[in-house]
Structure formats: structure tokens, C-alpha cells
Length: 455
Image 1 (cartoon, rainbow, N blue to C red):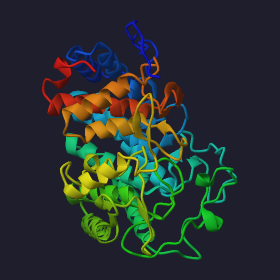
Image 2: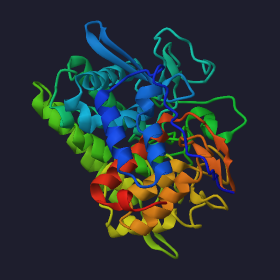
Image 3: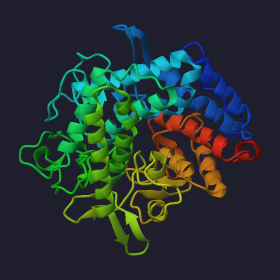
Image 4: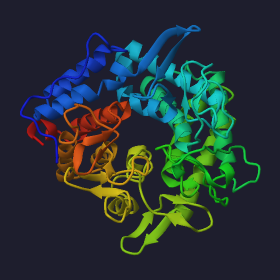
């Protein structure tokens, strides 16, 4: 079944309990909403686009004389490096118009810097640096202030992505100090260390006592064997699930783009030439390895990108609803939307050939082992629309998003393919702001599409 109601969808914003107020984002929300013909879609946008600022940020303008920004993911009171970048990403074009918003994002860049310096292998952190995690019994090097230590390559990429995006939209270099340069050095150290094959004494191990296999790494925390091939290992996916094979291709593609994107900053800073050259060389090495080892021939669809490989010749074919994903490669800036190899891969991931592509009475889209069989991620539907050149396909995606929020007025982590009322995570800010980003993308790139159609 799909959600339907004869009553107008109400606003879910609470004017008296907002964490951060940006007059510019409020005005963008108002103006864009007023131009959307479909009233329910307009309300979804006005609820979702400002949701990160409304509900998840903690901003201190003068922490040690500098701004500090902390962003929880939603219904978990910890900051994921990946999520925090993506949650504020759609606001970057407006930073020059709102000084406070610019300070907030600069504060998040600084907070991410400190997180990396605390532990570059951790994926999520607490605001309180002395807090002990509920996962303290994990068999890894847990430290106070770390919520979880599942190493995900894309987390480090997200740190670089936000820094590069902030600089590109503001030109400001004040938060790229010696501490930030040390953090970039740590990031490069980790990515290079994870290019090595399987070691009996690796720099990172992780094991957890769990009933779900995706929560831990095999071989007493070593993970699946890997052979050096130029790619960098990512023991965990952006869904926080363990990889089947160590080299996660979407994360490596994101690494190529992110490593290259920080060059503009590094070239503007004194004494960072060596870091810039190292970053560029690492990006080129990984890019060459993707093209050399991650392209396989599917028996029915021809050449496509694999989701994971091990360097020994084995590959794993699937895609996950989380980002980075194969579907998101153009969104990440790795390929063009009309790239033939990407289009072949896209045909694969949006079909029954992908074991995590689900269809049902409520909709169709990509899910994840993280939420189980049959649960579709709205993020995957949003990403399908963001990477589409077809108004017909985009219309189908918008219609599905409109009819599967189950009256909540927000995006969820996932919903059951036959009933959107069965969903996971009622408060997932990244999915909300990604939906807002989609609407802004359509306004810019498909003039008249939203103002002339209902979905």
C-alpha cells in the first residue's frame, strides 16, 4: 500500500525549538516551496531541507576563540564524519549570504579535524571528548570521545569533501591551519596504509560480539584477505556494514575525487606542496586501479563496475542504498551521467540483477543488508532522480517519495516495499537534506519542471 490523505500535509517545523536559524535558508525554503505546483511535495521540501539546521546542530561561536560545530545524525546522539558533511552540503552555496551559517560550517570543518586527529580510523564521535562509548567492548583501540570505530574509507573522504566545498564557496582559508594540515597528513597515511594487502599485524583490526555477521570482521578482526592492487581497503561500507571483499569501489571512486579536490586548498597554503603532490599521486594511483581491476563483464549487461573486489581477481556485484554507491558515481563527481560504463552499471543496480534492488506495492529501489531484504532506501530513490536525465524517470521517483513518507512529512532510512508505514529511523537528517538537495537540483537543471507538474 502507499500513503494517501485528503488532508494537507502540515508543517513539521517547530519555530520555538530550532537549533540554528539561518534567515537565508529560511528564505530559500519559502521561495522554492512557493514555486512547486505539487503542494505536498512543496511541504516535504519545506520540512526536509532545513531539517539539519532545525534539529541536529550544536554551534558554539567562540569555542577557544574559534567556531565549533557539532552535528548529530538524528536519532543517534553522535556525529558521523560522513553524515555531518552530507547533512550540511546543500547549504554551502549560501554561505557568502549568511555569516553565521558560514561560521557554523567552518566550525564543523574544525570539529571534523579534531575527530580525525583523535582517531582517523573511527567513523563516529561524541561531542564530549571524555564520554565512553556503549561499544567500549569492541575488540579494537577504543578511546574516550569515540562512539564507534568501524573504519570506512568514505568517512575520511567526507572530511576532505566538506573542506574543499567550504573553500570553493567562500575562499576562506582560516580554518585550514596547522592542525588541519596534520589531519590531512593522517588521512593520507591511513589511505596509503590501507593500500597494503592482508597483514598479520595490520594498523587496524575490528571485532565485535554480535549476532549479525555484518557487525564484525572475520579472521579475528582482520577482515577478508586482500592483495595489493593500488586500491585502498574499506573494511566497512557507508551503511556501517562489513564489506564482503576489502576494496569498496564507490568509496575508492570518492577518494579519487576528494583527494584531488583538496589540492586547491593545499596549493594556497605555505609549506603544503608535498601534501598536495602526495594527494594528487594517491588519487591517480587509485583511479588507475579502479579502471584496471574494478571493471568486469556481466554475462547479460556487458561491462560494469563491480561493487567490491579483493585484488585476487574476485568481485562482488551489488549496490547499496547508502552513499557512496555505484549509482551515485556522477553525483560524487567521478563520472559523467552519460558515461557509457556508468550507464551500464546503472542498468545493473536498478534491476533485479542487483540482489538488493526491491520492488513491491509501495515502490521500487535499492535497499541494503543493513536494513534487511525488502526494505527500500529513499536515499536511493533520491539518488536515482539526482543522476537521471529523464523527466519521466524523475517524475516516478518524486511520486514514490511523495507517497512513501507515511504521513510523517520526512524521509526515512528505509521502508517496507509493500507498506511505507513500516519504516526504519523516523529521524534521519541526511535523507531529509538530500531530498532538499534534489529539489534544488531540479529547480536549477530542469526549469519549469516543478512549477508545471504534480506527482
